[in-house]
Length: 380
Figure 1 (tube, rainbow, N blue to C red):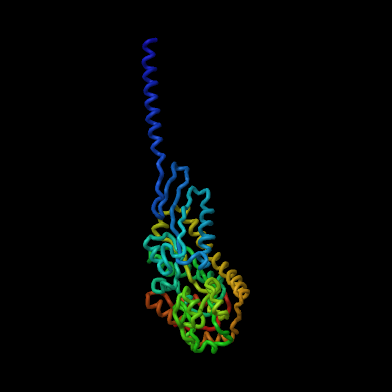
Figure 2: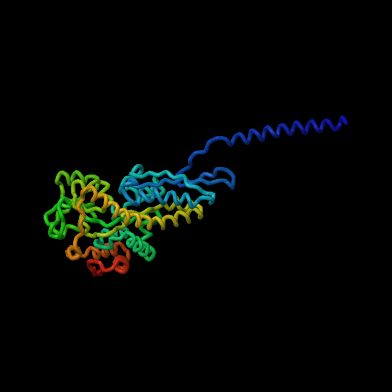
């Protein structure tokens, strides 16, 4: 009996030591983890636990300033979250809208440099880098329907790999198109004919000033933020803008005549993602990002269309005078313009792109889906 007590005592003692060692090891895991670098993922624990991916998404516009930014915030982000439920992955979003990380004109570079993982990039600020994306600004009097415009852009993108390549050259992948409602004119005076513009100073962002110069109007380049005061003080008499910008910046208060001339819906913004960020994502997450991005294109287009009608009603209720330029005057205006689409096609050709084919297909798709355009352009 004496011989058996010694081993039992030793076993008990060793067991106590092991218990203390194990307790000490488990106590070391209670420290907090860092949030991880942008685009990275944190594993919360064992293989069965949730993995978090940190992403920064932004825009130069506020969520109120552009329907594309609004829908990025209200549709894209929550819809991605919803579809990742049960996948073992979640995204920790940092939303940086209103230029808090990158101002208007800086977003393409911000995504390329990794300051943002995703961003709504405003294409007219990058006419040299995004040649194909600026097609709408070089083909006025297209469709006024943003949903048709979205369909045309998707088909063009699917047919021409060069469209995607202008983003991959900047280290990015395109996820969605953001189409505006139709660009029109808000003025201090009524417009019943093209002749009414002669000698009048009309402001624009720059890329669209060529649309009014042949009418005898005096083009003045101006950013949207300065338009209200410029019209109020007589620097110019009107501005080229769609309904959301007109209402949001209260332009109808100083220029009460809102005339539908039908310059058309245009590709204004694109949602892109940094390629390195995207390539590090698990396939399940990539799939969700791609799917929701494609849907975002049409959510924005649908919202732009509905937004237009609602904005017009609000402006009219606040005293704006809404009119539609007669179709004969619209055709006359279009005929006054130089063959801008052909010059644009030549510019694309000179850059080594199939410019003539792209522009011809774009115009044909518009005509097929929207009906006859007010002018037929000859593309060399």
